[in-house]
Amino acid sequence: MEFSICIDVDDVDRAVVFYGRGLGLTVVEHHPDWAHVKLGAQTFWIMKAPAGAQGQISRDYGRHWTPVHLDFTVEDIDLAVGRAIDAGGKLEGEVQHGAKGAMANLSDPSGNGVDLVCPAKN
Image (cartoon, rainbow, N blue to C red; front, side):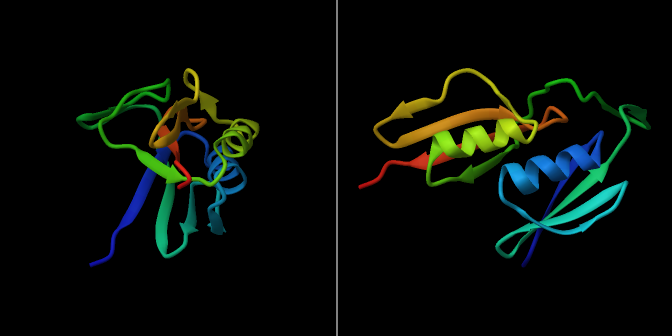
């Protein structure tokens, strides 16, 4: 079984910069209303969805919390955080360092939560 990850955004161009240049995903196709990006064999669809109510669903692109979010494993937390911020992401709080490694909580330009995780080096 395969699966794709869909990320709703208010601005596809900003999202492509963040997920492509900022997080290192490969941009396969980029259009005004959608983009296809990949990380290894994993497919991501960036989909433009307007803010406001569409039927029973209401989208708000201010920072929002959801129990489902994306974690990306990185080799160098400081470098990865800097790249993500330069590409439009927002760091939420301090980078957390512990015995198991480091983690940074960010949001993408549309307010979706993204964590960068750097495992401890053994």
